[in-house]
Image (cartoon, rainbow, N blue to C red):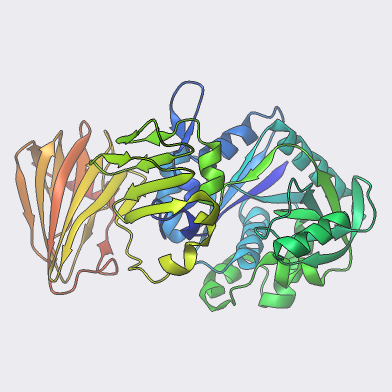
Length: 445
């Protein structure tokens, strides 16, 4: 079974925990039976691998998210990297070409594309199997999953099927309507569009050639930044005449807003927080090292991270995006494949950052042309390489790197340090990377 998991959007409706790099699907908010918290991506990926059939899972993720994907799923996971965000049609086209040209999947095979952010049970994954089987029959060019609505809402698009059978052709699509119009659509038998598609790989590659001008993986990758941002629904599905929809009435909840996420959380408090006995329906999600106190509040979500603080009524929490768009977009917390980075302070000419490096991991071997850096080791042990020289480091050590100095560090045990960046221009673009393995082999004491 071929599955493409879309791990794309920034998830600004879950600000301040989500940002351009740590999107909503990477937030570890869901408690497993063993008490460990996992993310939407981890949960859905693990569910797919435990449904009892062989699955070929590919994660479609933007370049900025690759480190987070590897950090949460391991380095063996199959990832199709988008050089930049271009919405779902270019991402699906690139992933389909990746399967055919890189993974050598036959173009005649069917694939199911689905998002990583629904809260679902095994019924959902059995429905994905049925969806792929239907796509293999080629009775339609595209087969969609239609979620049986539980209430009229303006959060989702709607699919109007031709009839009330489990599998039906599609009459039309309706974009996110008002709640009043949603009631009318539901009365006509409309289904929520869950963003799940099944089709033959050769079909979407033909659409890529027709719309984007290319359908080979190397070509799509080379021209990706020139493509128009367009969703798969708009570019393909809504123009296709041969579309079927399969009803799904099992458990399904979109985790794209704070009210939905809060309802799905098993604990009312994550992090430091206190909710008094006069409050009800309150959730606190706190990534800061300061306590949050909620007194006399009802149906409110409070979320705090290095990026900001949100206090919102649950019913209106889905409307925060226009306000978040106006904020400084610099992400202050980033999960990397080797650990994490938290920006503590930003001033003109300087940045102060806390770095956590996991045991046995190494940072990139790199240099910066326009800034100096200073490391202060606050815990742990490791080895730093500065311009080819290896140095043991421990708690209390201070390491200085002038602009142009090639540097990296490896943790013998979990290593935490404060990094001070000094320069008139401090930018993520000011980074020259080098071969780390060659540096480790060549470094001398």
